[in-house]
Structure formats: C-alpha cells, structure tokens
Length: 182
Image 1 (cartoon, one colour):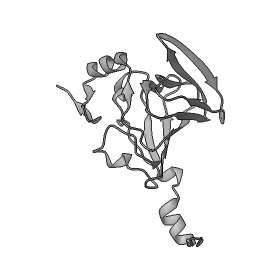
Image 2: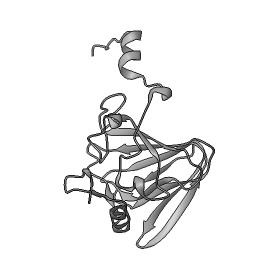
Image 3: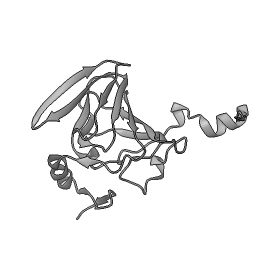
C-alpha cells in the first residue's frame, strides 16, 4: 500500500477547523425556536445532518467524512437549552465538553435520564427517542454529538415536538427540509 502524503499547509487549509472560526446556525432543526431548545449548531465534519439546507453556515467545516458526523451544540443562555425528543436511523453519541448535561430518552411513554459531566459519554441506540439539555453551565456550554452509520437519514421528531414547532411557525416537509409556515 502506498502511504499518502500531505503537507503542513494542505493539512491546515483542508483538514483543521479552529473553534474561533467555526460559525454555526441557530436554525438548523425544527425544535430550535421552541423555548428550552435554543442552541447554535456547528457541523464540524461529516454527513451534514441538518434540516436547513439553505443555510451556508451549516455546511460541514471540514467536508465530508465516511459514515459519521461531528456536531457542536453550543448553549449560551444558561441551563435548559438542548435538543428536543428525536430519533435517528443510526446511533448517536453525546459527549459534554463544557457544562453538565442530561441526556434523556423514552421507554414507551416513560422518560428516563442520565446526567453527564464533561468528557463522560453516552451512546444512544438506533431508533430511540432521545434529547439532551444543559443542567449546569456558564456563559457558553458545549455538547459534542457524533452521529454514526453510512446514512443518518432525516431526523424523526416525536409528535409532541412537531406540534410545538408548528406553534413557532416551523415544520419539516416530506423531504426532511425545514420550512416556515404561515
């Protein structure tokens, strides 16, 4: 096997993202206008699992990876911010980087939760409705999400989230794209 070569400048230009340059979007997903689910989404690398394909700030910062994506979820307004109940056709790993977070999921209609400190991790199985919320944090708290698998598909929102999002003027069309409703 031939070993690939890559120069310092090529590595820096095409394969490194600096946190200060990693701008994201406050409207990547259906739930982000629902109180308690405000956050900034930064697609670092990978499949670009998003519902707002028109927002160039959601393009992966380091292009496409093979079979996974890394996403920063920034909460900047204290406790409570996070993702509403959703499911994926793949596993999803959550790793709090800054702040204490809680990952919650449904078993039938019963909600369970586990509290995670920075650098703890949880791997949520395929098809389980899950979400996360900031429990304790400062001015900026960060949750890293890793979505695996060859095709993450679209986000499957719990029916309660869809109803609440409609109240904010948002819905997702049949192709998984975010759209304003009148």
